[in-house]
Length: 255
Picture 1 (cartoon, rainbow, N blue to C red):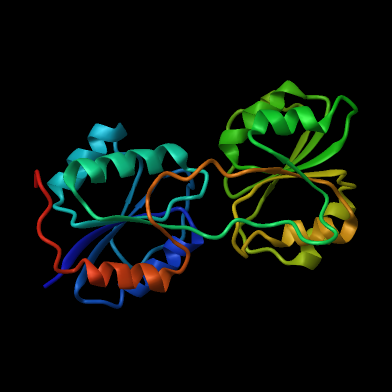
Picture 2: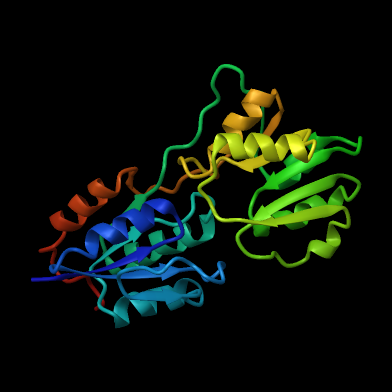
């Protein structure tokens, strides 16, 4: 007997879980991606890309495809999607669990300036023109148009829209993981004075934090939004075990 599972992806943890479920004949899983990356890495299970059309669209999708369990393995800052999936699963009485990575924590030698939002990060950079390494994702870039006098080194997987609002910038296209030595060399070569990062957690992009520590650079760290009430796991193997436990769950209401 198979269980139909929807995995909302966008994180390395999602990719690891997908590899695990692909080997199982008793799990019929679909990976859903937001579509923000033009050329995502190929997945070994059926994949859909793009939004659902809001909360109601997500409910319709879950009902139409007779989904029996949902894993929210989106990026830790994908707050709206997480809220929608929590409400949709509650409405249909579907089991839901979040798979995420632990947040980074400062250690000895770190010079973190923690803020709540991208706008707060702009403010804390100050009025003196500085060389800033921005690693905040494309959705947070518009906030920095409020301080166009800084020189921004921007790294992304795909070219972001709206960079004309940051007239003094340099764009680097690259996909993680990155090495500490490479990050340190990049920051030295570009004479970086501030690193701005979201607290995404995980190992794939932590090298920039370690490199900033080595160089004694301040890190403007954007805190994660508060988690919803969904049960959270941080290990793909735990998520697989969770799917197994729900493999014989009764059909949800409204399906």
